[in-house]
Image 1 (cartoon, rainbow, N blue to C red):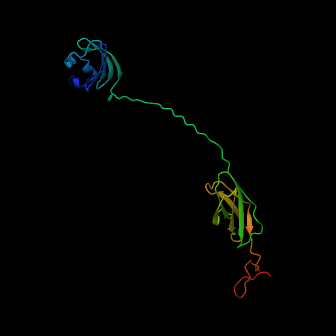
Image 2: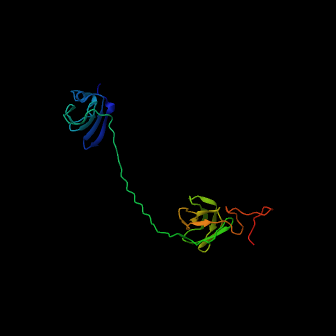
Length: 218
């Protein structure tokens, strides 16, 4: 195709020197041919430089008299549209103050002789930012035996009364921070025996009166 003035643009103009950019679908050899820029109206002057983006090359070319192009330097072969990539690097600094906060729960010893149908008084000494303690009985598999009771921390201690679980062994009392259950302490294993207030059969069942009530020891 012929020269197109619409794709010829001045990138830099200073002290009689101009750097031009010309984009065309013609090949470099076509653009370098004699008379190609004859229609430029004298805009191209000797000593100017052209950034040529042709169909088969990207090149820097000097302008000679005529105007004609010199040999110049080929920067690349077949190219697409000329694009500019800009990058920026930002540095960020974050300062964070860290301090340790001690929180502890110490479970008081349990009463001995826990029996079915009775109750278990529990208490714990607390230090640090703990506002309430959750007490619960857990069986040998680690499952909670309902109910769990939440007690407020008053003057560094919390207490509650839990119902005794069914007859069995391997139970534990657990006291946990109400706001962070991962902070807890567990008692040693304990057993729950039969209620010795009643007279028992050989299989630990209650002996009953004719009225159906349990037969108690005198």
